[in-house]
Image 1 (cartoon, rainbow, N blue to C red):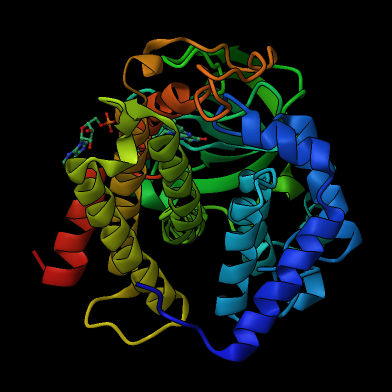
Image 2: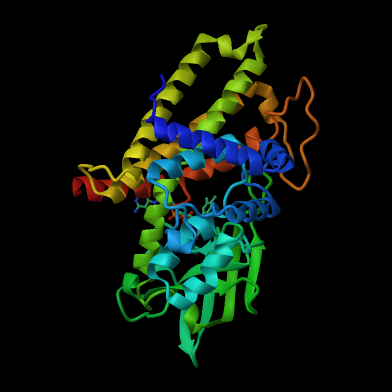
Length: 400
Ligand SMILES: Cc1cc2nc3c(=O)[nH]c(=O)nc-3n(C[C@H](O)[C@H](O)[C@H](O)COP(=O)(O)OP(=O)(O)OC[C@H]3O[C@@H](n4cnc5c(N)ncnc54)[C@H](O)[C@@H]3O)c2cc1C
């Protein structure tokens, strides 16, 4: 089934497609298509940001005054979809999609002038320092403290699961600046340079062979007070704004659509009892169900992006999208592994070792499928676990 969009948007899609084809370096596209890890290499991510920025398109979702494109939600959706379809490197999500909107909404002019340009131009990588041992779902209980001493915050504590902290230039952290008030009221939002003395980053080996997640230890780390975003004690409000934003985008619909297309390549390329796996009726039924679910999710995302009236608050809708989006990511990647059968058992090193050259037995689509499926088990955890999203829906949508 194909639900057609209006002709102007189709024209916009063609323009975007031509633009990407013209500016995306083929070797970068090839690396991205054949990569084993979940994300592109940092150098590709930042180089791609620079290329997009030189055409004014690295942060199209930001307000025009800060470098955005002034596009409608539908145009943004199409742009993102075409980037994924074309195997363009991912954005530095932390800077462009998490911190950026918090900064231009709540940051001082000084912070906006200092940080928005270096995010927009791909000059920096960013890490999100929220979770702590014992404070993940119950984030308001976080204990990392920041004490104001002579115009500087002195930060002490530990963060965990900090994605990309080992190669991030900067981080945005939730810290406790007041222990005397109720937990949510004592939290502030602080920008910290990752090479500040007193910071130790330790990588956590993952099941897929990657080490993207980290522990971050902060020991008397001195941070200029003007790196605190907005007002002290308002960090919880800013974090909720960020997380709701993250959940709407973390439906990862574009990603899942591209991976479903890849699953179809696998089904056509692999054999079962001497015939393409794609001919198997049970497999076809599985494809049909996932495709229908993805289509339903896509139109739900579009309704949220169009700010259509819902009979539930938008934050509850964002949680529903996060739940379904993460479940479908897992279903698509598990389908890929099932289609590969025994081939899914071979271990391919995550970067920097490139996957071996393709052969008839080991086509291009094999390396990376299992590593990505394994790390996707985390999709129902990061950004707020599935159970926590269900709690949010129960509270906001049903008043329970
Ligand atoms: C791949 C990955 C990347 C991440 N990246 C980052 C990052 O960059 N920055 C960052 O700050 N954090 C990051 N995280 C951390 C993530 O936000 C937390 O893992 C998540 O919020 C869950 O917290 P927790 O791990 O402490 O689990 P816990 O909170 O201990 O939860 C354990 C289990 O109990 C359940 N549970 C807890 N409370 C309730 C409740 N009230 N009702 C029902 N069930 C409940 C949870 O759903 C979960 O199943 C990342 C995590 C992963 C896996």
